[in-house]
Length: 273
Picture 1 (cartoon, rainbow, N blue to C red):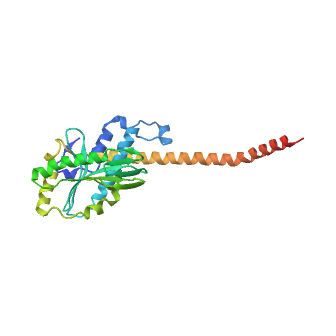
Picture 2 (cartoon, helix red, strand yellow):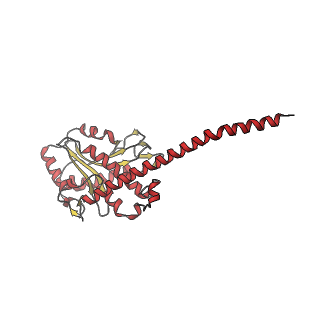
Picture 3 (tube, helix red, strand yellow):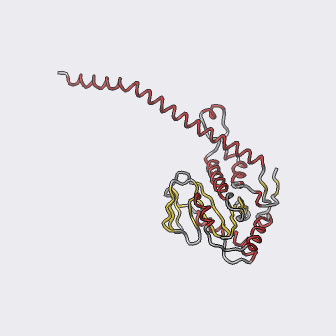
């Protein structure tokens, strides 16, 4: 059952991603007993991408939720007329920040001005972050008559390396692990009165796309269950892979002496007059 949110603070990190992941049957794979034993993933290729996205947003959301009490953090804010959402919106004395979380586990990330590449492939993260920040600027700053704009941030989670040759003009790209400290170091932009007005507008569901929902406990419980299934499947695949290597290694130890004996016998035979 969907419950309409009375406060946007009710929404959880990755809520929109989780809703999409679990709503589309093509993201999940039916597994029989044998498939489960051998560790087949419960996720299709498309589902795995949504799942990784959710994992990244949850990790960043947990970190943002540790900001001091005078900072306000909102997650999965629905914007536009389709299914777009702002991963995280942070409001503090240093400004308003729209944060686009990207999970690129184990991959190298390279940034030079408006070019962002992941494992050698160009990605539209910078352009998308600018677009999201512009939307929020219209929804919040413009309505309240505030100067300046919402600051877009791309927070990279889990990358093997992040090399920033040159930051984009409008977007800040950084390792998600540095995000909290970076936010706290921003110079003061808003006083208490402006912050109260901004937070009140952001927290109002009427500011956002119609039908913004509170998190469904059944939905979150199903995602936790799915996360456990993914973890179990990964462990089982690793164990089967290790077992195969062990068997292959044992076989090589047994066969190697026989192969060497055959080789030396053949060589000796060929050298005989």
